[in-house]
Image: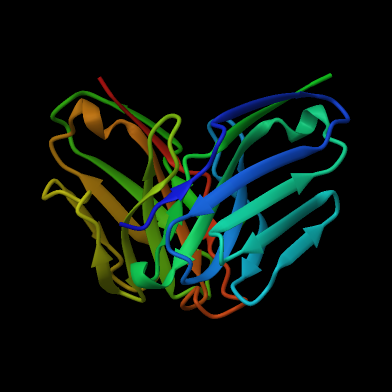
Length: 113
Length: 117
């Protein structure tokens, strides 16, 4: 069974600190990996998508890396702000799973002012 | 706003009643997906359509669940004889074509919350 895991489930940091969010997947044969943000009671907002041929993607204060050989992706958020408080989900498009995304359980982030 | 619309956003229903959710994908997208998310968990795949054809269904989609996309545009997800375990957020998503191809990003709607009392 293909699995995507995010540890820790929750994280609290003071404002200004860099955030490091981890995502691991058991099947390294993926097409891509995507990071989403979810605010309470809301849908998913795509943050970054990394193709399997790429090692990282950057957008503003966000940087996501992908290491297929170790089955890991990391989302870095520089200089965190209270507005970054949300749940962050990673999802892999796994070749053996067809056309559906396989999600991790998410990391709930609180950035304290 | 991603362009994927879902209605209603919230629904409270009594156990045993039927409910229907609607999803309007981004207009040129031929793929449409339904996911379910319970509190504190990541979304789980339910089913997906390519145009009007339902190509894959998860084991999670019991006989009480039915999804349609009659004209290849909007989709409906109906839950019959609701149970308390059906309480969740139902997310709809769409993509231009297979997400395996770079550039065919999957876009999610705001979700429809279901509470079964």
